Length: 358
Image (tube, rainbow, N blue to C red; front, side, top):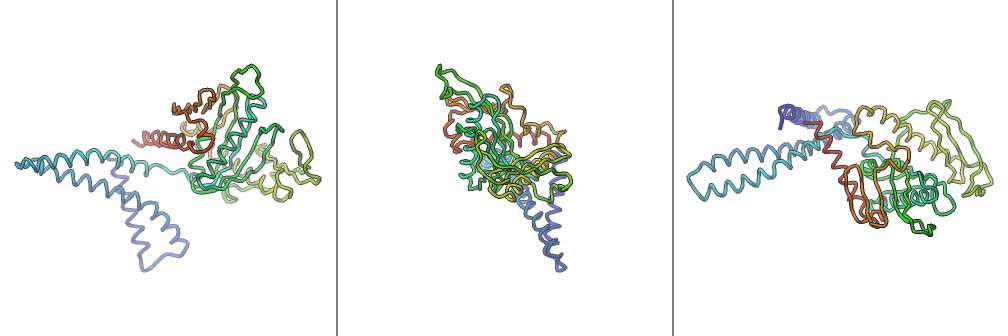
């Protein structure tokens, strides 16, 4: 490992020791400070343990050098075998340590707001959008997460013009953030008599859920309109003005919510989505200089823009960012095989950030 990295490891170990001393001190800090110090100590402990593990391997290798120089043929053979095993193990340990040292995305531990919109392709695109929402719902269930619809605009034929959901659970945003982008489907529509393959798109946005402390919204910056909810094709589903449309005047962002019969609940859900969009906007502005983060931007929904293609005739799913192709389309849409795409995406992001760490 480089000298710069060694210096960083020494600083980590020194801070870990300092935290341990402060937490064990007779003049203990106040309760709030204890919570903060304990959290930092817990985060640094796995790193300190990994450093100790690496240094133990390095010490063992140094000790084996003397044994290799021995006149005892049998001892030399055993020492060389052990050397080979330790040398093979060391690069993996060092990589694990470097991953631990990567800057954390503070949003990774947050819940997420999912937004899916039909793109190019008319009704077929709307049907595809509905399939994606169902895929993420199943994926959330498999991970023990809570999936709550925040608003669905249906076409009347089973498709979704747009749909939103709140997904809550452990590390939701960390797992789903690379799903943001344009998704493309290639298949023969049921309504297509000639059997031609059509290409349609849908856009997916995964936003970290924001708290009120993250984004302060002034009442004067909001225009709130209320109206009657309507179903597919304009059919009225409510006789009261319970639907809510909120416009954030400084940015022009508009959020509409009409799923609930209560105007109060619709307003609360709309504010939740607005807050998430504003928080993500802030994050992207802060990280605009980092090219690696630009992959999380959604795009326009045109057929030429895509992060992933689902090809039904071949049963194939291809993620174009990492050039990964798998023939498990049913399992992907069932949520079962989605981790087989998400895990390599996370690993690819780690590898790119590790390259910057060198």
